[in-house]
Structure formats: structure tokens, C-alpha cells
Length: 421
Length: 86
Image 1 (tube, rainbow over the protein chains, first blue to last red):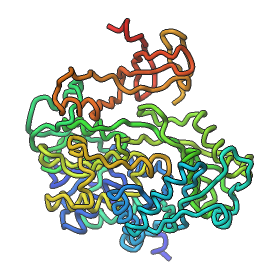
Image 2 (image 1 turned 90 degrees about the vertical axis):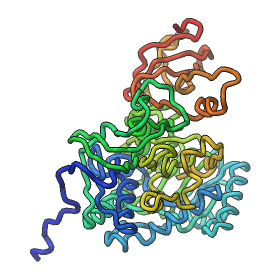
Image 3 (image 1 turned 90 degrees about the horizontal axis):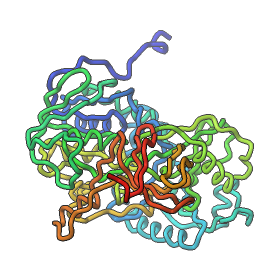
């Protein structure tokens, strides 16, 4: 009985040391996953993970917790499929129940052109071995009886991309599970320790906030990180921040092709279970799922401007509600409990930026995750850890290097990443 | 995104009347290197403090103008038409 009420910390607190092999900035799912795989796959445990707030305070705790792999490009599909596979075995691996519910994911199309887009995605997915197919009105009505399939909506549902292995997971549990596993390997986690500067050898133009942004990173070597609790010497610094990636990267003198935009979401009061699929509508710019607790989680598209503000706004809430009622009119008297925003680092091609930076030795990026970062945490962490440990960029993340903007080899993922999570 | 923007022609209006046109960048001269054009196209300052931006009054005077906006608070401090900008 005593054991039942034992007090066990998920992770310990430490004093900040003066030197580490690897310093990771950002203790969200990406930062902690990178630390975890550095320790587990490569035996590198002299690692500090810095977080300016509590663990998972950023987009790891603000996303709508949807996991899927039905992307569009031949680069994106295998990458996200690998992430889904890692998520499937993660509860067992971390010995921590992540409540992963692979309930199935439907992307609805309400126009002919959208149906065409879904067909292309289904074909690409099937060739790459991802379970995904286009289904039509009769099958949709059977899978989601609550959905309004009448001719009442202005844009009736025509077809859907059905992705059975997609689902929802408890996002806080993923962060805590990784944090606990990191702690058990001796990796230090430092919440409320903000990185304020990144030190490097190299040109003096570094840290000059007013120099115009350039595509060419500066030459040099990383030497350490300055934090609110003192300086740390480190030859390897990993930027795993979301929303603040540009600000942190500027400390190292590296400009990024990123525009930060807020994405809003909200949650309703708990309802009896009526929806056991994740519903996304690309045409209506909304996505809906019902949690195990019964709350309905809704997300919008990104606000159409650059901003670091994390305030929810009434017009966006109205938009989310309006579009959700087009799909589920029976929800007209349900109350919204909370609304929030996360800030998303949008890249021009809707693909992330992962890997090292040519010229600046020891600086690694895992940023630009736009609106789809949470579902890629494990795969990004695993392959970035390999990249750091071996010095070679794994094939799976090669297409997502920062240098693609100089070489003009963009990976256009907008068709599958823009609204449909 | 819920705030007011003082349009140089129309006065204070809801941000929903406007279209965001991105941060103001300096365009490379004709004949600049490919690298300069790529930097212009892709690299952004993406500032987390006041920055000069382009805005377009879609549901008003239909003019492009400059605005100084704090991207943390969304407060717009000043706006000007391109021809009167210093």
C-alpha cells in the first residue's frame, strides 16, 4: 500500500554544469526525443536540455495531438510513416502509457478539385506503403454516422481520404515519457533555464539584429551557450524550439526562411462519445476530434499574419464553430471551455528544416515545423541524434536540410500539411 | 489576430479589413547575384518586436501602405503611404 502512494519524481533537478557534450535548446517533444535517442542509440548522455518554461509549455502542449502519415511528397510520406511506426511502439519503449488511440483519420473533400488532390495523395501513400485510400459518401456515412451528409451544407461532403492508422495521442504524456527516460539515462533536464545567447567563433556580424537576413550561414564553430543561470561550454548546440526558432537561431547568426504565425484551437465541454474518427476538412479549414474524456477538440488554420502573440481571438473562434457546425449541426448548443493559440514556424514549402548547418560546425536545427511538428517528434529526434552522433546526415532527413533553399530543391508539402492535420 | 490598424486613408479599422503583406525587405538591384535574390526570396528577419511591414486595405481604400507593428503585442504604432515614407 505504501508503494501505491510513493512519491517518485519523473525527472530530477540539477545544478547547471559549466560544460556539456551537447546542449539542446527547447524541452518539448523534439528536444527531449533528440536527447533520448542520443542516449539510447549512441550512448551520448552528457547532454543538457534547456527549457525557458516548464516542460512541454510550447507547441508540445498546444497542438491537437493528431498523428498521421498520409502526406503528399515522396520525401514526406516515408518520413512521417517512420514517425507513426515509432509512435506505435513508444508506450512500450518508454514504459509509460501514452494513450495512443489509432482511431482512424478522415480528410474530407467538398469540391471536385479537392477530391482530385485526395486521389493523388492516396496513390502516393499506397506506393510508399501507407494505409490510405479515397472513400465516397456511402462509406463515409457508415464510418461517421454523426456527420451531416444531407444537401443542407453549402459544400456537401463528396469524398474523403481514409487513413486507418491515424489517430490521437496524449501529447503531455509523450513529453513526460521522454523526459523520464532521459532522466534515467543521466541526461539533465533544466526547466526555467532560458538560453540567451549562443557563442561561436567566426565573423563579427554575428548577433547583429539589424543586419539583413541572408541565405548564407556564417562560417565558424559553436563554443557554448549563455543562459539565465550562467554560461555553458558546448561544441554541439541543437535548436529544437518551435515558434522561437528564428530568435534562437539569430543568436548563432543563422537566418531562417521562416514566418511565425499563430494557430488557434479550442475545446468544448465533455459530451457523450459520438465521434470515433479524426475529422479534417481542407475546404472548411477546420479539424475536429473527440478525446477519451469526451471533449471536442477543434483547430483552425494559421492566422494570416506574422505574430508571436498567443492570444485567442473571437473571429477565429466563430470561424471554427461555424465550420464545425457545417459538419455536425447537432452541436449547436455545446459550450466552448477553452481557446488557445500556439505559434507556428511556417517555411515557404511547408516542410521542416532538420540537420546541420553548412559552415557553422556544431550547430544543428530541428525547426520550421509549421503546424505538423508534434506528429514528427520521434522520427526527427531519432535521425537528428544519428546526424549529431555520426556526423553524417541520414538519408531520411537529407531532403529537409537548410541548404535546400540555396539549392532550390524545396519539398512542397502544402497540399497535405496546410490545414489538414 | 484582433486589433485595429490606423489606415493612412480610412482611419482606425479592424484588422479583418486588411491583408498582411509581410515584412519590408530591400529588393536587390537588377543584375545582383543569385544568392542575393535567394536571400531576398527566402530569408526573413521574422522579428519578435516592432517591425516595418506591408499591409493592404482590401475592404477599404485598396491601397498598399507601411505599418510599424509590434509582433508580440500586435500594437500598430504608425502607418504611412509608400510615397510619404522617409
